[in-house]
Image (tube, rainbow, N blue to C red; front, side, top):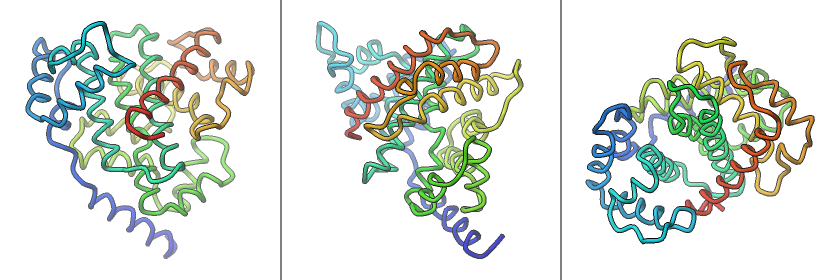
Length: 294
């Protein structure tokens, strides 16, 4: 490895070592088992133990996007309105944005893309009809899938811009360019960030592997998650920057091409895929506004 690339790699690895820890409440939330009968009560107890998270959750439950007829005044009612997993993921998103505070439009676009992918991956899981796939688990994976790019941007923005502006046309070419410039990939950096934060090992695996191919008929849940995440990532990449054309603006051929990239066990007609893309972009814009990322 040449000296500049070696130095940049060391710089990025040092930044990982210096990452602030996620709040212990968030780590515990992500480690809860949604299949347990006590999951709702466990989530409520953890959130109630952290007043700042309770306030954040109540504000979201009473926002225009979620508000019902009656105002929400308790954590339990807020979780019931939002959903237990959605509440946990909201606090994860809020906590991670405080670790990687966006400073300009470029960094905000990274968060916008992450939220778009999270929402689209969740929608794909809902349509998959696979009981093994929890939609909100896909949301968490989408939210964190590019977290390594945030590390790159904070520590080496010129290198990240060089990667993004390079001559690559596929995920394989992207990670090859990253390795050539930085000595390692954003997927590797992201997985190590998840491990530092003591998030579930399956989540770290998905972040590490989200640009790698999976079997056409996967038998492992983690491979199914990667398969859906790859499609959501491709669907949302064109619209990462505010005001830039989305996949929808590229016309029917682009949607048909995306439909062909769906795993064979998930069949979606182009109009339904169009609807998922449009709704995901709109919902991500709303979440960005709530997190003050606009």
